[in-house]
Image 1 (cartoon, rainbow, N blue to C red):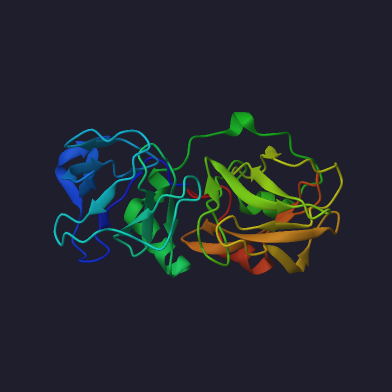
Image 2 (spheres, one colour):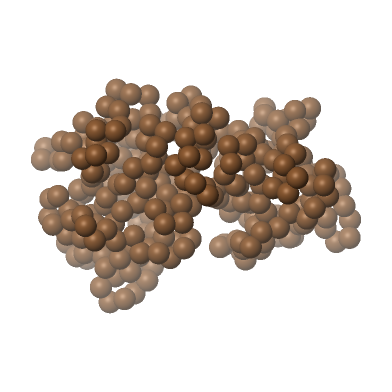
Length: 289
């Protein structure tokens, strides 16, 4: 999510801005921190562009080394209760100007990072205003679109533009579901086997891959959030085409969050939103949809 968008960050302890306008990386102000490694301390600057991993430092940081980061103002060690899901290193917290938090892995070479919203809808609205999402839309992927069926849910097609990039979140912990430019889930099949499922984040692009095989036409038993492991099943919503069970995720639209339902039957391409949300968001010719 949010690739190529520059972020403005502050220290989570003292609240001072960490942006260094004199030293730019990726043509944007860098994030200036102090670092500590093997008894040595020095400066380090990190690209503020979300999705970039460009770093410069006072002395070389060996690949795979775990680095301690400190605020250059209050000299507090930056630490959190989160560990990296990929390499188990501590995650470093940074406060974004609009109130959400950015976590980055402290291990050199690991690219895990995520955004956390304490009040998801309020923070996202501020995020849109701060970072001008309409000017940073993802590249056009219409060449990758699959041919749509004639009987496709017309309400969804009218409301949201084909090819719209879905900024997806867990409705329970509010953490992003975007992983390496896919929407990622933990998958539970009918035999209680667990694996991972990755869906395209582009609306009406039905490419996907999973680590366990799901027979065509079979319903997946459950999809879980990979961060909090909460079930995403929607007990009050069935598929509008085949009447299978659905899961509910949250996607951003028009500076607000809406519920987005996905059918659990392998091969069914139905998905939809509620009538209330249909009235609340813009039509296909809007900037964001």
